[in-house]
Each structure stands twice: as structure tokens, then as C-alpha cells.
Length: 372
Image 1 (cartoon, rainbow, N blue to C red):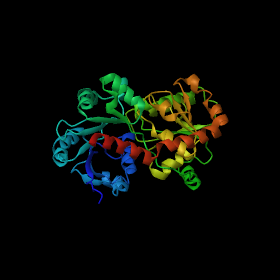
Image 2: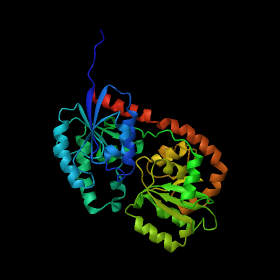
Image 3: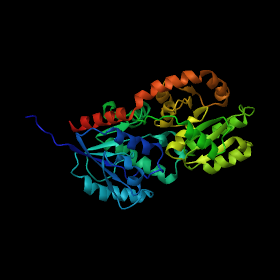
Image 4: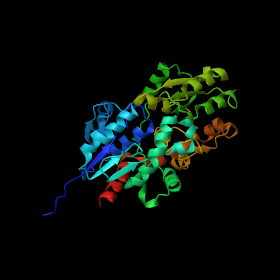
């Protein structure tokens, strides 16, 4: 009779993951967990803040979720619960996977740490003084203490090796998995009607209005090289630290009639904004990955992005990758018109590399490597 092995318990710390508040890192981890569906060799337990179970009910069949008696909106409260409530409940787990970039001081020492990015090293001016002090204190010790580290891109891996003198074999690239998205023209028409975009050709930028997302660059294009063109720009995404500055710039630049700041939209409506666009434009100064690029490719939309951080790696040959200068982007609309069909086809091919299953398999391989 074949020997039956008991599934190993993996505890996953998502206490930092306030739904809708933490950007792409929320998608990265939740999609990985969805990709673990079918990996019965692991007994998965996720420890989550209030509101997470409602926001991510799709994970109920994959992981056992345990809700802490608080939201994750206050960092001090979250740190307290990590070092007390979480530590007590995960001390017997075979492995604890901390998904928020730093390790608690107390708790099970057999750990996998997910580091989404190290933006604070490149753009410290974009962080509050409190947040910057916390990262400078916690990140170096966390990456040293972790048994292994998972990152979304080779770019982040290389930066960690360089900045923290880490051995390469300690760091594993776990690709971002993206659900297969399908264009729905009825949803596009409904979205255009709802937001007054029926007869508008537009480029879409899905990103929180944080400074590094660089929304101002697109406003400068509209006011400068693209001032005689007819296309609009649609910004979708939650309010970030640079939101007020963006509103002022739009007003001062005289392009308010061509800029639509929609705010956060969900699910099918978000996909409709992307699917209805001439192209997804992504002039971000820093990304640990950049999932919107792959999502747009899945929807059959051409992609234009900056040549910064991980974006060229993610885009491959399936996007127009440009330096962040107005001159480099000045002829982008004409280039997209000429290359649209080719970029869409390349995008469909590129998407196959970033499925949920592939992401889950990457993560499972890291779990197995630590536990073996």
C-alpha cells in the first residue's frame, strides 16, 4: 500500500492586506493563492484582517481563512497582532509565509518572505518619514532573517542581491498570475455611456495617484506634444498621495476637457475601461512587476510603458517600451496606430506565461524547496 503523507500546514500572513488599500501587492498574493487550487499537498491557512473574507470570497475553497479582530488600516495595530495573535496561532505551522515585505519580530522562524519591491531605496522622497524609518529599520533584518524570499520579477531579485548582499539561491521569482480576461463589448458600451465617453478615443492609465505612478507625465503630453490631437486620457484607480497635485496640474495645464479622473472601479467595469481604450499607457517610474500590462494584453489592447524598473522585463517584446521623456512619447499615438495589430498578437502570446496556474506552481515549488 502506498504511503499516505499528511498535508503540510502553510500559514500565510495577510494581516497587512487591507482590501483596496495596498495596490498591486493585494492582487499578487491573492492570485497566487488562487493558483494553488489543486495543490492538496499543502494545508493552507490565511490570517487576514477584517473585511478580507468578504472581498476575497473566491479563496474560500483554496485556503482556510482566519480573521483577526481588527482591520489593517493602522500599521501599529497590525504589527501588534502579528507579534501576538498571529505568532500564537502559527507556531506549529510547517512554514509561515509573510506576504507584506517584512517579518514580525516574534513568531515561527521557518519563514518565506514575499518582497514586492524596494522602491524606498530608489525614491525615498515618495515615502512619509514614519514609513521610511520603518522600512529602513525592518527591511534589512527581515531579508536576512527569512529562510527564503519570493519576488515578482528578476529586477527585484537583482536589487535585493545588490543592496543587501544576499545569496542568489535564497531569492525565488514567483511570477504574477493573471486571470484570463475576455472582452465584452456590451460592457464597454455601458461604461462609455455611464461616463460620457461614447464618442471619445482615449488612452487608459490604471494606477493609484501616487507620485511614482507619474500621472503628471501624461498631462504634460496632452498639454505639449499631443495638444493638437483629439485623444483623451482616462485615469482609473484609488486616490493616492499625489492626487491633489494632479488635480491642480490638470486645471493649470488647460487640459481638463481631455482628462477623466474616474477613481477606483472594480471587476468588469475596470476591464471595460481597458478594453475600450486605444492603448494602455503606463509611464510609472517604479514597479516591482506591473500586472496591468498583462491584463491589457489579455484583453487585446496595445500596451505602451516606460523603460523603468521591472516594466521592460514584464513587457517583453509585446509592448512599446519607451524612455520617460516627452520627446520619446511624442509620436506614440501614430506608432500605436501602425503597430496595433502586431502588439495585440504579441500580447496574447505573452499572457500565456503569466497564468494563475503558473504563478501557483512557482509558489508551490518554493514551498516544497523550503520543506524538503
